[in-house]
Amino acid sequence: MSLRHAFDSLVVREDRLFGWGWLLDPASPVRRLRLVIEHADGSVTEVQCQPAGHRPDLAEVYPTVAHAAGSGFLMQARLRGPVAGAQARWEVELEDGRQVSEAIPGFPGGQVSGRGAVSPWRGRWLVARQLLSQGRPGPLLRRATAMLGRRLAGWRRRA
Image 1: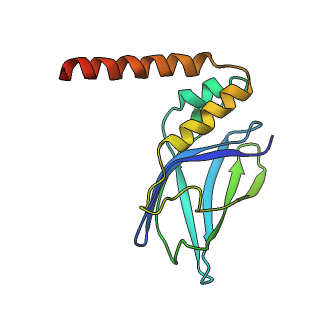
Image 2: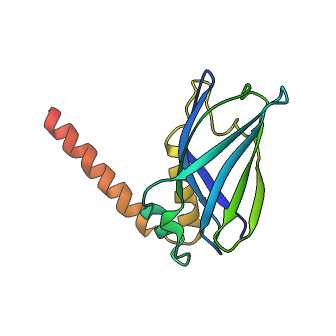
Image 3: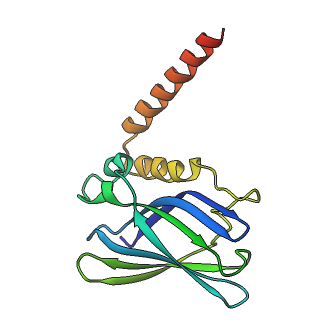
């Protein structure tokens, strides 16, 4: 398995980029993570990503990968060029010493909407799809049931 990744949220406003998501290599935890954006005008933005919190959702999806829960990241940067027409890649240094560079196809098209932010459901959809492909609908059903219960309780309070 090569790198797995998703942006849970990615916002571009004027010349600022802010977002979070996850990136996972099944063999080794990430030591350093950098997003390199090559803009259509020739300029390059290098974004140092910071580790971010515990991700129990990824531990559920990848139970055989001991470091999956620690694969979240945050990023913030000032862009050096326009995002339209840009190409991006991950530059990853892993704890086992390997260096990995992997293109992000379609960046930012699938990640950033016209209003500047990706739907928070995109990352959740990727996690759900992975669970279903593994034949493990249980965690999804528990989450859906809990969400439905919260919605019903909210409707009852308003009624």
